Length: 323
Length: 148
Image: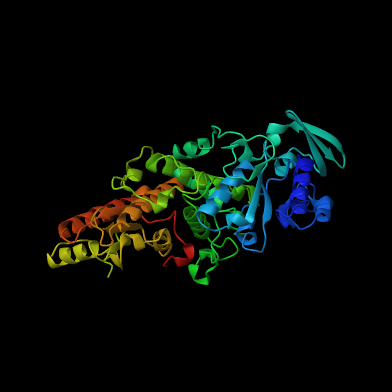
């Protein structure tokens, strides 16, 4: 896959279709692959990486990049194309300045899960069907791929590219996933249990703002959380209210626009399941206002920008089952 | 203003009332000499749609025990469609608060027209009683804002 992507990038650079490429390069370790911009074939040869740890969604970088001179080439996985489509719909990116090459994705790995098995010093991985061969500085280890798969890929919602100019490989389909299972499980708990669950999770928050910075839906130039008057811009966890407020408001600001790409949970250094908050909104929107998948198209109205005269009343929340 | 006999818990209720219907409804209940608890503190907003989810959380942060949002009846909005948006937003917000384990009876949306002074008073009485039963808001409060 990496060779195909690299040769495609070089070809498009050479024939002048694009003047730069957004891709990924190795970080300090083999598994912390970071997005990077390449301007020449030499740079691509030297640093371009696409492997099983390349899970970063580059759509958000295109907000700034697409406003610059000339076209940029972006390689997008199916889930990333939803984010780009949503940004196009909100006029946050200049789609004419982006050349999208859709690349298939069969799930990305989470280095933390591998490390949790006691495997350290990872220098590379190889996938053979269901088994994962991990090369480490101490020798070779194996483990099932499914146990190392990142959470966001385990509950993948779609293998279909919703926007692209060109495809490498075959296009997939929208798939049935179990992504709402955990939300349902929480909904069936009592109010006290839910409170305890979230207090436990959210109090871990160190307010690093990584979830906000990585989120392709969070593209406001002036974020409410950067406002010194917001009362919630402290860096450290000074009071549980701050974390509650931050996460509720952040999830609310992306409600109806979140494509469920799962980047928020992936980057969270404290492993807070932030995607559950977004999925709760998606689930509510689906059940109350009709099925809606953000980023699926560029024409439909977002559920919170729309209404019907016979929407349910807010009291529906109070009438719902378990307490 | 708070009447406190030091025995019974007196909740602090914040009521966001839209300028065109509910605020006038509150006015009417006053001119009609109808009683509603002094626990209710009214904040006038131009339209129920002006209420940002942050306002509601902020009220809880500053020590409110219950927050009620009143607006024109659907279809009667002064700005045609403001309250339809409010309805969707608040449904989702309340559902989220419920999901996070905040007692669902602490939040409410009620449509009160300018002619419904009696409904305003009845709603406030009922809501205050409901919040009183729940006791003080402990799950969504900011300890730094707590009054000693």
